[in-house]
Every structure is written in C-alpha cells, then in structure tokens.
Length: 492
Ligand code: HEC
Ligand code: HEC
View 1 (cartoon, rainbow, N blue to C red):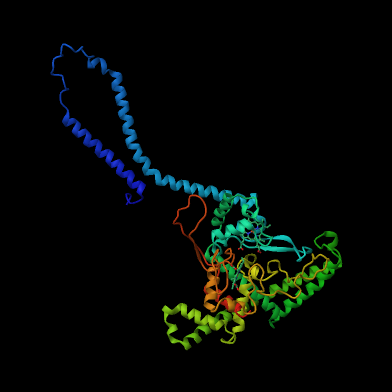
View 2: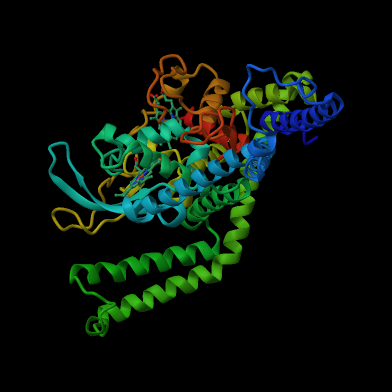
C-alpha cells in the first residue's frame, strides 16, 4: 500500500533497501575475505629503506577520523532515502501553503486592496453601486443604484478564463477594469489571487436552489398582490396606494421625516401612519399570500407534467425510462409552441419570473444582461433625475428581453438562432464558451453568456495546481427551470 503511494516514495524505499542489503553483503564478504596483510611474510629487501611502522602511521587520530567518516557516510546513506520519502508530502504542503497564501491575499484584495466588497458585498453575496446614467450624447440622466451580481456562485456560471476576461476589462462601465489588459491597476498574479479567493467562497447546491426558489416566490407574491381578487390583496393594494399618496407631498416639499424637526410636520405624521397601515395589511395577508403563491407555482409546474403526458400520448415509447431526455425535449417543444398545452400562459409567466429572478441582487436572472434597465430598476419611480422630477427612467416599463449587454431575444429571434427548443435549452445550460460559435449564427465571443447547468472546471488558474485537477460546481438552475425560461424566450 505504502509502496504504491507515489513514485517518489517507492524510489525512496528502494534506495533504502539497496543501501541496507548492500551494507550487509559488503560486511559479509569483507569478513570472509579477511586474511594476513600482503607482504608481511617477505623480508625487507636490501635496496628498500624501512617504511614507517603501522603503529606510527595508524595512530589514534586516524582511527577517529575514519570512524567519523564512516558515521557520516552512514548518516548520508540513510538520510537520503528518508529525505526522498518525505518529498511528496513536502510538495503537497508547499501547494497547500501557496493556496492558503494566495487565498488570503485574494481576500485582502477583495476587501481592502481593490474593494470589490463595496459593490459585490461581504463574501460575494451581491451588492450594488451608485452610478450615473447618461444619454447617448453623454448628458447626465439620473443617479441610479446598479446591482452588482453575487460572486459566491460565479464559478458555476463562468470558467476561470471567462472571469479573468471580466476582471481584466470590466463591464458596461459600472464594473471597473482591473487587469493590465483593460488598463486597470492589478497584476496578473493579483487577479489569480482573487480567483483563489473566489473559489473559497462558492456556496453549495442546496443554498443556490433555495435562493432561486425564494426569488420566484417573491415575484409570484408581487403578482398576486397586484392582480389577485382576494381580500388581503385588495387591502394591500389600497394600503400601497394610500402610502404613495402620502409620500408624494413629502417628496414635493423635500421633507426629511427621519429628522426630528420635520417628523412633527403633519405630512410626515400622515406618511408614518400610511407606512404602518401598509405593514399591517401585509402582515395580515402574509399567510394566505404564501399559500396562494405556493399553489400558483405548483399549478405552473403541473403544466410541464401535462406536456409530458401529451408527448407520451403522441409517442408511447417516450414513457420508457431510458428515453427521459427525449421525453424532456418533446415536452419542451410543446411547452414552447403557442396554444399546444392547456394553461400555457401560467407556465410562460413562471418562465418570466425565473428570467427576472430578483434573488441575490438579480444574479440568477437573465434580465440583468438581456433587459435594459433591469439592473437599476429603471422602470421604478426615481427621485434623482437631472430635472429633479420623480418619473422613472423607463416610464413605459421594461422591454423584456429586448437586449442590453446580451443580444435582443424578442421578435422570434431565438427561434431563428436555435432551430429547436432542445438546442436552445442546451445553450442555456452551457452558455457561450470563449471563441466558440453557437446556434445558427452566434459567433464566438468572450464567453460572457453564462452557463446555468452544473459545470466542471478543468483549466484551473494559478501556481501549484495539478494539470489534471477538476473541480465541480453546482448548477444555478435545474432542467425544469431552464425549460420554463426557454419556453418563455421562444414566445417573446
Ligand atoms: C464600483 C463597483 C464595483 C467594484 C469595485 C467591483 N465590481 Fe465587479 N461588477 C460590478 C457591477 C455593477 C457588475 C455587473 C455589471 C453589469 O450589470 O453588467 C459587476 C460584475 C462583475 C463580474 C461578472 C459577474 C457576473 O456574474 O456577471 C465579476 C466576476 C466581478 N464583477 C468581479 C469583481 C471583482 C473580483 C472585483 C474586485 C477586484 C470587482 N468586481 C469590483 C461592480 C463592481
Ligand atoms: C452576464 C450576462 C448574461 C446573463 C446573466 C445572461 N446572458 Fe444570455 N447572453 C449574454 C451574452 C453576452 C450573449 C451573447 C454571447 C455571444 O455573442 O457570444 C448571450 C446570448 C444569449 C442567447 C443567444 C441569443 C442569440 O440570438 O444569439 C440566449 C438565448 C440567451 N443569451 C439566453 C439567456 C438566458 C435564458 C439567461 C438566463 C437564464 C441569460 N441569457 C443570462 C449575456 C448574458
């Protein structure tokens, strides 16, 4: 077992064995070959001067020196193999040390040196940055709060090379360029150190799944509050309207109700009462709202089940467990085809809620890259516009999937790009890879379309990393969720 541990270790043991056995063999033959000293029997010839006696030459000092040499030789002969034995451990220890040092330095850069933490949040949980929106001519439009995605899942969606691209060149003017390639202040080694740190903060599959789910629930609850006829929803809507009515005059007079002097103003008193009433209405409806949202989501997911049943009706061989994938693709084609499945509207809307998932600062959403304004809530009310008004930057709302950093997905463009719902879904699962074309006309970019299925990193960056190292990162979305998004996109 130990012998098989590693080549270095095996070689170490072999050398040790050779030295040991060789020593014994030498001792054995040496003793056997011992005989009287050569020449001791011959009389001294007359032309030879008497040599120095052995007793004169071989004094105590020589004995000590020889003994010392023997001891040293033995030590070296024994120590060398022992040194070899420890070599793999030493190499491993050095790599662990390097990883620890790089991770610590990466954390230092994340928190202090480059202050990623200010925008991306503690331990990469996601955050935001206040920035200015300008028009095409560079004129100031508004001050907005732009969401910065969570980085504790970034290795699930991008390869390390793709992350390095973003770190080098930044994105959209809001994510600064850090690497020398983009004119930034950090060295390549510092970028590698940041990657070591990012590896250390990735969260597990269960946490990801619950974050994604909580984001969908939030969207469904917003929809129910806005649209449901249930008493609690009507009550919350009324309380929201009353709160808005109380907010506008306060904004108009620029009152700061958190300031003790302003707080006494009757407008602030009204607003405080409206806030309390809204909280109370939400509290009263919370339980029913949660139950209704869960029911709505179950209904939406049941549509996919219906599609599978229709597909099996059409082709009974799809019921075979071995044809799971074929069944998925047949059902997905139906789910994406207008009018092919009952209650399809609900299913497509479920896809939309995944597309606009608000969890973790929109990290899991598609809208942050494919819908202009999504990352800074452009369709919400804003107070800080150039002309001081409170209208939103996108008064007509979002053009969902209309394109921004990623291409426009509307008007059937995804049907043109991907001939089948299957190839569309497979693209969402893997994303775009640096330099690789996709679909019918997608040319190879810089890998900036993330992959949403589980991925394996096999090109890990940095020193002390074994060539064959492979690291698995969990999926951001499961196949049912990806299918719902694909159906939604194919109907945009
Ligand atoms: C000034 C704020 C700010 C700072 C500082 C900042 N970022 Fe960003 N970063 C952003 C924003 C905003 C985005 C999203 C841009 C967008 O919406 O297109 C982003 C995007 C990213 C992405 C792409 C992630 C994805 O899923 O799309 C990575 C990776 C990233 N940042 C890493 C870092 C690292 C590492 C640092 C520190 C060296 C850093 N950022 C510092 C604001 C910032
Ligand atoms: C970090 C930004 C980003 C996010 C998040 C993102 N995409 Fe993309 N997406 C891109 C980019 C960039 C491209 C173009 C890639 C290229 O040209 O190489 C793209 C391309 C696409 C395409 C191909 C469009 C075409 O016509 O060529 C589809 C479909 C798509 N994305 C769907 C999605 C879906 C679905 C999600 C969410 C599950 C999503 N994207 C999330 C950036 C993003």
